Length: 315
Image 1 (cartoon, rainbow, N blue to C red):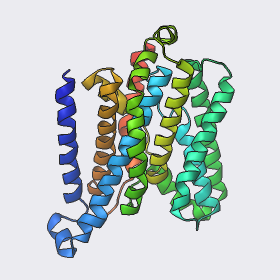
Image 2 (image 1 turned 120 degrees about the vertical axis):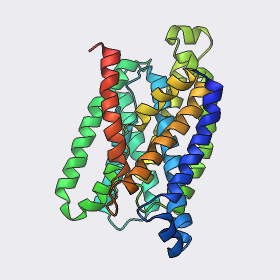
Image 3 (image 1 turned 90 degrees about the vertical axis):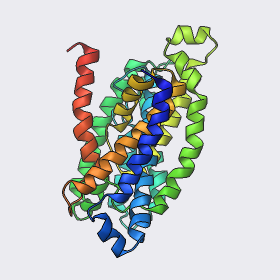
């Protein structure tokens, strides 16, 4: 494990992958150039940047949640945050099909915040016990998934747009979406870095963290709020791309260790790599059909989640 080397090589690999994302697609490079440079800049480059920003947001959200609950199986989609954002966005798409995209961000954030508030109310204890947070979150995810399914069945004529969004797709994403994501990441990423030391203290246990001067309850609340905002904004733009928030922090720990000062930037870059790679594969595997990126991340993430269950539960 060479943390400094890894943190140096990850941006290089991400840059090479981004260049590949601009050059590769359902149209080969020569055909794309003959059709006009706008295909490379307005269609592919903007989409690559959206994938990087959304992947970084989802990865960071997963790192923050795992740091709070001290559970390697926690992630935004597993504990209900993604489900809350998804329910709000699906409601908006199905009940108000003509609504402008600008309303998706506040709707998704509101849905995620309400879900988090409901989860905290259901936990009903002063120290936000990590095990109870995860169990309640899993139950909420199942309930929110059922509500989304009910909405889809009860609104069959508007279901196509919602299904594309729910599977997690970057189709049609452009510079407008980059402009939505970039300010959020520019604000939330430094805030996450500022919490690195306090998250390291939480990993020592509540009593040890309090003995070293950390306010455990306040740290958990702030970290949960940051994770909700990161996950909700990313989900609002790209849909429910699953398992990125689960896999990215684990890969980052294997590469750079458990210190959040290194883990947070590494997780952001690995999340960006996962979503960008999934989107590139979605475009080139079966042209002209484009697979949803969320399907590919689920194909990778679900077996990895089962592996983690066997590793951490002793199955």
